Length: 93
View (cartoon, helix red, strand yellow):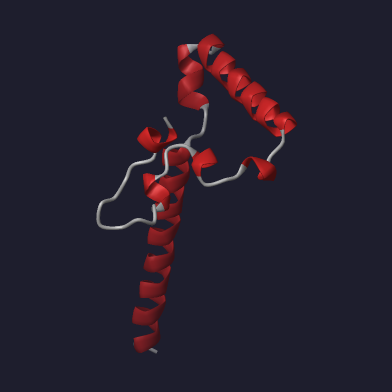
């Protein structure tokens, strides 16, 4: 089953991070305990429960990865505009 869940690359025998579907294929069981597995499983079930119980408007309120990426891009654009304005105005002085 684990070989099915890990995409195999014919040209490369070393898997890339983007090819890994199940992390336990790379992490030996000695690196995590049963308590870790239960904690992660519990947190995941709680997250799914919150998603099931939330209202439609709550989905729009929650911040997600797209919001964070958009804010990062806007900050880069503002920074670029400030640098451009500074370079242009410095040439006129």
